[in-house]
Image 1 (cartoon, one colour):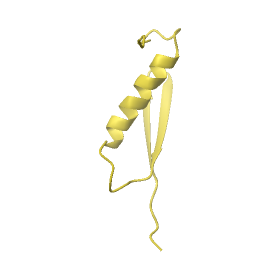
Image 2: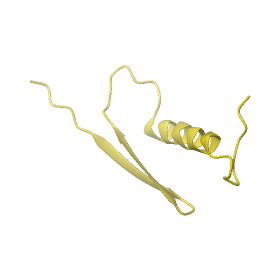
Image 3: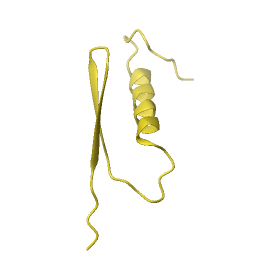
Image 4: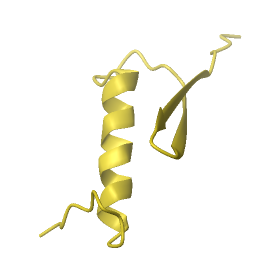
Amino acid sequence: MDKKQTITIERKIGKITYLVQALPSEKATDTIHKKIEKLIVKDLQKKPGNPGFLASE
């Protein structure tokens, strides 16, 4: 049986700590750093009270 290893990366930006867990895939095109960036942007778009809020159209 092929056992896959989960990767956990922690990034702190200001007062927010992001924990990202990933299960590597041979078909993946994003790096873990790109995935973190996408998650942060998505999080900012959901929070209108956030100073870094990005309005989505």
